[in-house]
Amino acid sequence: MQIKSAEKLTNFKWLNLFNVQYIDKNGDEKSWQLASREKEPKCLTDRDHPPNAVVIVPFHRPQGKLVITREYRVPLGGEEYGFPAGLVDKGETVQEAARRELKEETGLDVTRLIRTSPAIYSSAGMTDESVAMVFVECDGGLSTARTTSSEAIEVMLISAPEASRLCNDPSLKFDAKAWLVLYYFAANGHL
Image (cartoon, rainbow, N blue to C red; front, side, top):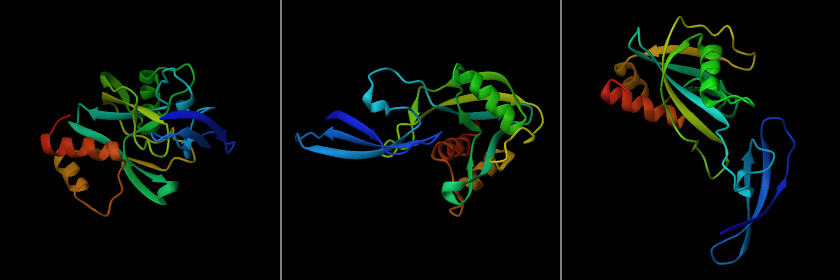
């Protein structure tokens, strides 16, 4: 397999579509369309790429509960259960982005960084976007006062039994990463 070239098909601020030409394992030329947050798709460069975004997995130590969000997502035309998340700003570390996004979306403060994942990919058949999952302990009161007009977010503190109930409700929509963490939390009572 060999990447040959990429043609940028759109010109938007946050995300663009590319048509990538590549040679398959049989030597045939093929094309693949993908979305990227980069100026050129990551498949064209050999350099390491930092995560585009963070997904924060916050545990509210004083309450002994996991912090989750229910947020309206335009592509779904409805609400999705997930975790606070957002793009990493230029010049910002993943951990700095996690602290900022947690405060903006939930009003909570990080009290301890527990673990940060490497760059992970959720839908590699469609996009080269990567995220880092940042597991934290947090404290404070819930607030969405710092969210933007395009963020319709409800913040919730949930126990392991509540996580189990959510995970077993087929009518709900989940971020894939969030469902896996919630399922583990429901089964084990801790992260």
